[in-house]
Length: 104
Image (cartoon, rainbow, N blue to C red; front, side, top):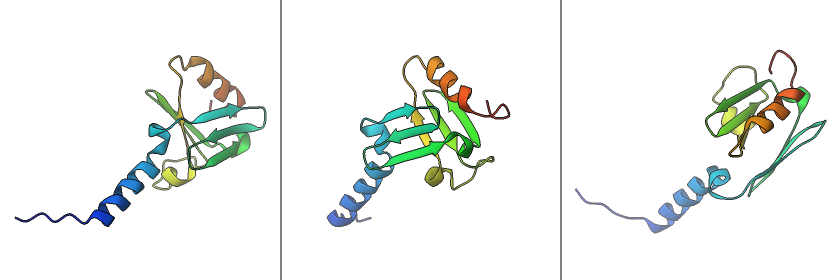
């Protein structure tokens, strides 16, 4: 069983992995205001207005905002992952205070 290493392919695959998981590898920042929430990730900036948010999920040390009511395979591309602080209660409460009653 021979193993060949294609260096350019390996570099591309590592770049894809780091690019798709960059919010976990590099600093991200979030700003909540009366109109919405802005996420500044290393490779992009995302803004959701509160009326756009249809779903808010908290799992462990992270949260996820989605423009879709039901989970979808498109969530990865259309949603906003949020890295919560060590004491997440205040951040979760701030987000929920801006959501409609059916979501909060």
